[in-house]
Length: 176
Image (cartoon, rainbow, N blue to C red; front, side, top):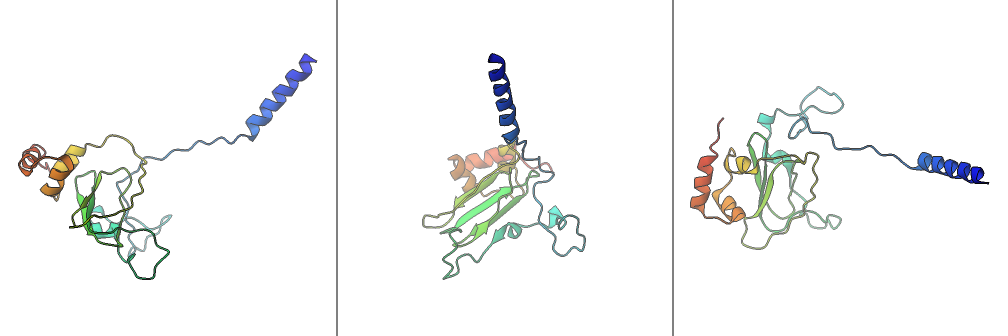
């Protein structure tokens, strides 16, 4: 009797293990900060090749037109004016002022910011994710960016005065 129940429990355990899904998933480390498709290229390797990072601009990450009247299916986009941007790992700043209905894509794992630069409250919707939760030296990126992040943005973000921002920036002068 005990032998029979032991066989039953073993069979039940094996069936449960075979039926349970086993997921081995992870976010791979990115090979580059971002990849903006080069639609003019004739090369096609599992998709379009990336633009030369030196040719990429903030406009490649922005889309306008979601403020069109009658587009009741679109619940996304910003309200008011927001100065938004992100910093690539080499310190390059990609920034743009967004108006109502504009969208901006922040690449995963990079330092980014949103700043209300208008006279009225601004509303934006952000969806965040990261495939590289490792170390990012925020001070180096923010205070040594090329082109420089506005002193006003840094002063408000860190709740310090503009003179302090200038002193900090002097410590992180770009070494390019």
